[in-house]
Length: 289
Image: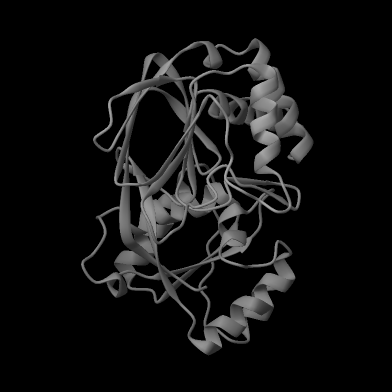
């Protein structure tokens, strides 16, 4: 139904992903074949792969040299599409996309880059990535993706996972390195959604600035829950707490652990790493927004 609606306003060539990593190849092919627009109907992981395919040869000097991206919600959370103002409902988002195409609405987004891989909205080393890894295991075993599944996984890994017990050294700007037990890096707001509620761990993060981070130097149950509660307020204000370090508009953030820890990009577990350097990449991608 969605492709029929889009086909009335666009000339479409369709491709369906067959396995993890396939969307990277499709994005790279779209760039080499000179397409005008790449429309992704899928979740944030698929969007991330397409972006990495489009930018496989690097960010061009002129952003018009690669296809423009449009993202339609087709996953469980769809943070990227929703951060650009699209409805979480795919049918409504399709109508919004066609209106924006007709109006010629587009914008340039800054991205993040973790070593050699781009990300659109968030990255994390340690506890949050451990929860993401757990969720992916449960989904592979047949569980349905939901906010409740993510909450259960986060609580479980908080108390029984090893990630919270392994310190991470944080380096950013010209400040002295410091030790932390949770580091969430944001390229925009929100960090994610719990159903319809945005989780604003970095309320000042934006595609138009550098990277922000929500860093906890200690992970105690009550203070951590209090801070997370602050990020879910309907009328948000910057989170604050004794063990919170908030970073804003950083060009580079380096994270290093004493042993390999789970790492996630845009809500997908991408493996265990000991060290990762995250860089802000301004004006990297054109999108319909």
